[in-house]
Each structure stands twice: as structure tokens, then as C-alpha cells.
Amino acid sequence: MDATTIAGALVVSLLLAEVLLRLAGFSYPNFYRPDPVVGRANIPGAAGWFTDEGRAYIEINSDGLRDREHSLIKPAGTVRIAVLGDSFAAAFQVAADQTFWGRLAPALEACPALGGRRVEVINFGVVGFGTAQEYLMLKSRVWKYAPDVVLLAFLTANDVSDNARALKQSDQAAYFVHQDGKLVEDPLWLARREKLRPGALDPLWEAIYARSRVLQLLAKARAQARLLVAGDKPQPALVVPGQEPGLYEAVYREPRDPVWLAAWSVTEDLIRAMASEVRSHGAQFVLVTLSNGIQVHPDPAVRRTFAERFEVTDYFYPDRRLEALARDAHIPYLMLAPSLLAWAEANGSCVHGFDNATSCAGHWNENGHRLAGEMIAARLCHDILPELAQVSR
Figure (cartoon, rainbow, N blue to C red):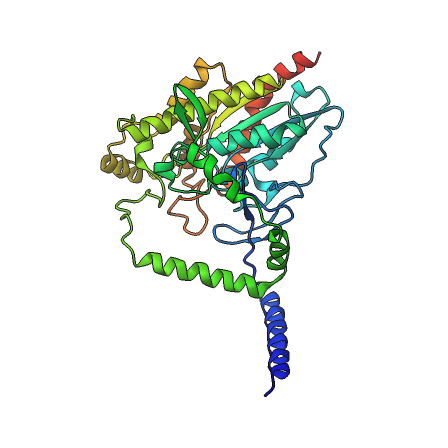
């Protein structure tokens, strides 16, 4: 068999594999690319089914946002709300109109403080972001949309630890540190950031990958192989229900060791810096703390066992600490976890989790997003939008 025949057979086989994979509904999209500003960002135009947790068709718009298209020029008679956050804001687990930010505009339609104006919500959430990346996103990519309100959706489960290199342990993330009493970008991050600039051929490769189910299958096989290799290595044991891989129980306790003290200090200064940045643009800054699975688990026995094992005396310690920060810095603040816990207990249902209704772990499900959207909308209507109305008069 000559080379031409072999090549032809290979091409036919690949085309057949493409057809079969598409008929089978296989999809393993890549949504991310390295980014020299924030470390990692969404790929503009990326789309595909996300099925790792929940199931939703994800579309990234032309500006790299998990959202619909938005014009840069704010329409007349419109209040714009920019949402910053991590995977809870990206919310790949549910359809866009089921996310907390997707529910905000419809929930605010009847708000008297709007005075006939419409609400437009723009989602800047990216999976894996910490407060450092959200701050850099705010400074570099939010203001061209001229938002009236900037809402930081803060996840205490990992946003504090994500702000410390020693805890996050990733080189594909931006960090800040304190030097001479000032908050500055981490020199190690600054030295690495240019290496994250996309190459000239990267967009071509992204386009090919997005259209090839065979390449996606190979990428998934490679990812599974890595998991198998990692499975041969010792992993931290999950000793009680309510634990989640990659999350630190230390966030529920007063920090004592230098790493956690620094993580909290940097986090709090980043939030202050964000508030100052927003105010300098004449907009309103709002801090919202979300919920962690164990905080709002509907089974008191699970929460009690977890607390005893990890010496947790107050599941809302990180939320109350940020509430105190917000009060001192005059930042409007909303704590969602206690209300979500009350709903979960009253209904015997989880607001986190999809595959196993008894685990109540992972990201928000439809219940979590719906309730969060309602609570955030109520707070915006009651406290934030009336202030905007007074300013606009």
C-alpha cells in the first residue's frame, strides 16, 4: 500500500470519526487561554456543552465574557451592573438565564427606584479567578462598558486562599503582595506574565480545536490520563462529609500562621482598592459574599461533624470578617449564606450540587442561583438603586 493510499485512508477515517463523534453529541470544548493581564481568560467566541457538573451550553461572547454581546456604548435610560467573580459567577453549571446574574435584570424590572430605566447586567466572572485577578479585570476591561454598579461576588471557600501563591499553588494566576507597606503586584508574577502573551498561531489552533471533535477527544483522553497518573500519588484524605477537594477548612478560623495572615491582609486590601477604583469612576461598589457547601448544608449533623473535626466555631467567620471590613470602608455589603442555610433547612434541599442530591457540595444548582438572584436584586432595589436615582437627578 503506497503512501497516497495510506494518507487517503487516514483522512477518510478522521472524517468518519468526526461524523460519528458529532452524531454521538461528544463535545470537550476549551474555554480558556493564557492572558498576560489576569493570568488566564476566556477565549472569545468559544462555545460548547459543559457537562462536568450540571449541564449547560456555554457561549463566550466576542469580548471574552460568559454572556451575550453588549455594546460598549451604554444605551440611554439604562443602569449597568458589572459582576466580578470566579466560577460561581462564570456559572458553567447552569444556563445563562438561570444564573444569579442572569436573573437580576428580570427581578429588578418592577423596582420603583429605577423610575422607568432598564437594567443591563454584564458578567465578567471567570473560572479560577481570585480577588487579584478580579481587581485587574476591573481596571483593564470593565470601564469601557461604563457600569453604574460594580458587584464583587466573593466566594470565601477559596477566594482568600486564591490570593496567596503558597495556597493556590498556580503559576497561571496574578498575585499581589505587600512591599514596604504597599499593595503591589507580585514580582514573580510580573516576571512571568509576558510568557502568557498569546502566540501568533494560537488563534488558528483555537479555531481548529473548536471545530474538531477528534482533537477534543484526544484532549479529553490526555486529561483523563493525567488524572490517572495523579491518582497514583498520595492525595489528602477527605475524612468527613462536607469536605471538598482543594478547599481549606482554615478559612473558618481566625488566621494565625504567616501564610494565612498574609492571604487575609492582601485580600482585604484588594477589596479596599477595588472600592476606591470604583468610586474614582463615579460608580457604586457592592460586596456580596456567596456560600460554601458546608455553610448551607441542610443536615445539621453533617455541619456538626465537620465543625467538631476541624474546630470550627463559626461557619460564617469569613463572611463576618468581610462584613466588618465593609462597614469600616463604607462598602454596601450582603451576606447570602445565612439566608441560603435557612432555606435549605426549611426545604430539606441543597443549594449546592447536581449529581448527588445528598452531597450538597460543589457549585450552586438552580436553587442556589435563583435564591441568590432574588436576594441580590432585593438589596440593589432597596439600597443601591435609590442612591443612583438621587445622583442622576
